Length: 80
Image (tube, rainbow, N blue to C red; front, side, top):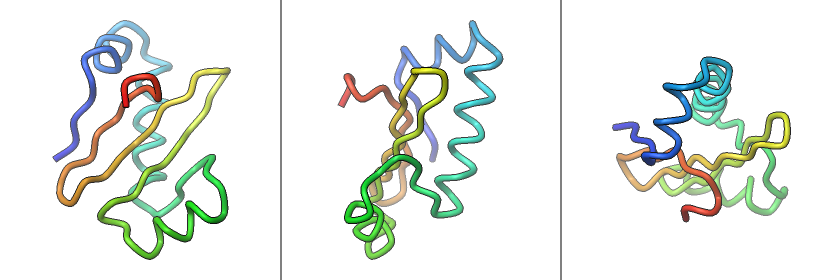
């Protein structure tokens, strides 16, 4: 299941460009492209993708995508 925080959801509803950014980030995450993480964190994600954390940035806005077994959550770093 893919979920977002309320603030991500609200911004996606308000801003179609942000929604496209989130959707593209989710596609990357599901392909194993972890975005803007260190090589060490990328290796950890590769070793245990069921607990992966990806970081994606566009025009100064950063989101995280976190997998916890079966759930994928999209959130701002400040919401962790």
